[in-house]
Amino acid sequence: TRVGEFSFVDMHNLKEIQLSSTVKSFGKWAFEGSGIKGGLRKVVIPKGVKTISDSLFDGCSLTGVDLPNSVKTIGESAFSGCDIKEITLPTKLEKIKACAFMNCASLTEVILPKKITLIGSCSFFGCKKLTSLDIESTKLEKINSEAFSECTKLETITIRSKKLTTLGKNCFDGCGKL
Image (cartoon, rainbow, N blue to C red; front, side, top):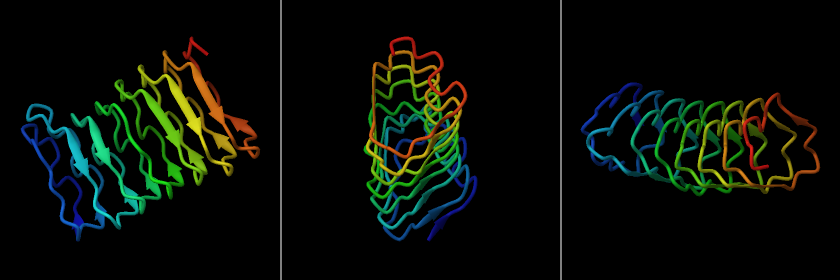
């Protein structure tokens, strides 16, 4: 089963989403801008979903999301502007695309799993409460431009990859506590 593009876009009074275990994919922008007035707080993504689509929850009022270990890719702007405070990223996650968690101003800690190969541009840009970043991946070669810019409270970074050769332009710009 697939939730199509724009299915629930701008449903401002949305309070809860219960997804069937048969859902395996989402169209872009399926829930974009939803739940702002209704208090949508948490979503559980069903097992078997491999990709969190571009802008899936962009601008939603989400404070939490449960992602199954089947997720390998988080698309562009998937959770941009959400109120997510903490998130456990799946162990099989390989790619976080551009702006995926941009302006998630309540996010405090990020642990990037061992299989991460891509951290897209502006992935965590503007996560103002982010204090700790732990990159467990040993495969990561590049962190793209502005990936962690304007994370003004970021104090601790642990990077385990010995393959990391490139930090993109302004990667940690505006991170004054580093």
